[in-house]
Image (cartoon, rainbow, N blue to C red; front, side, top):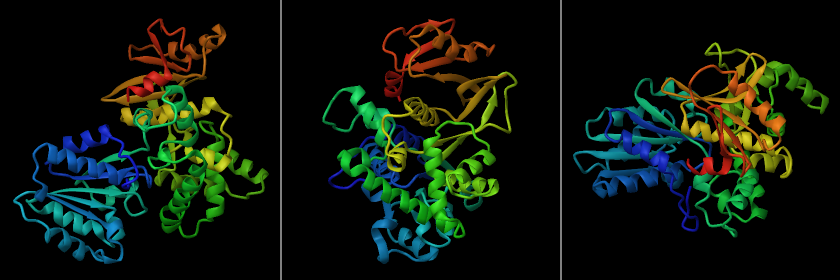
Length: 402
């Protein structure tokens, strides 16, 4: 959430999505990790509505976090609070974090049923995560999953250096949570630790009170140290056991599910690029924000390849509807991103200036015999060209297009 001392960073993609769904007969829900900027997105949408001609009196804002103890405690009180502010024939009702109110969905549903309300809500904790939306608001909502800042958004924050490479180095280390992006480097870890602890307590533990939070945190640190690695549940269990943390494969699965439903982790499922079908085994996990790797491991100069792979994965989630890991026989394509039934294949590498490395990275893409776009992303400034229909791009330039 932005404060008076925090610059508001434009979130154009999210704001445009809310504008596109304005006045349509569904509840608009913005979900995402805590502190990724959901409240700011609603504020930007409200301003965009006003700029588009909506009267200020038609916009109703209920911020449950700011109301604190004076806020509604029942669904009826939440509904009555919103209705009491309706003065125009058509109103836009923005409710920030309604899940603080038990059975909040009844109030949201009742407002949605009115002819004079267009309803917008945010959610991050265990009662309004993506996995719960279908049961709480069946068939009556559309969801926008907000991620931390993209690099293009991050680039707009004033920094000591204006060099894009310096920006990118900081982004790779400290991640894209909006407030963390404005802090001095020495304060980022302390802030991220508070965010992580809040998520583990309010989202994971509240939903799964029997979970061992110390082990959940240890598992999350293991995933941060193994970004993009393909691990079976048993291998993770064995690896943690070798480090002194005993946990069964079944419990590993349960803990990973909890980390993904709170947006700390994302899972990319495998996809057979030749057979055009999803596979059952071989998924990979990526961090919802790279800053947590810095927090948990404190190593900023290792696994650069894994970190840029994580950045690309999150960027593809912003730009495409689905993102999978690609398989072509024994070869692996880093990502197969899809939208409107059309795949786009991506390979990610630090450098392909070495001819053998270039051949190795191109081979999986060349093995796919279709005419859909194929892109190789690298940190090379030179040698950018087309390789038999495969476009090679400088990663930073590609990110800045987002």
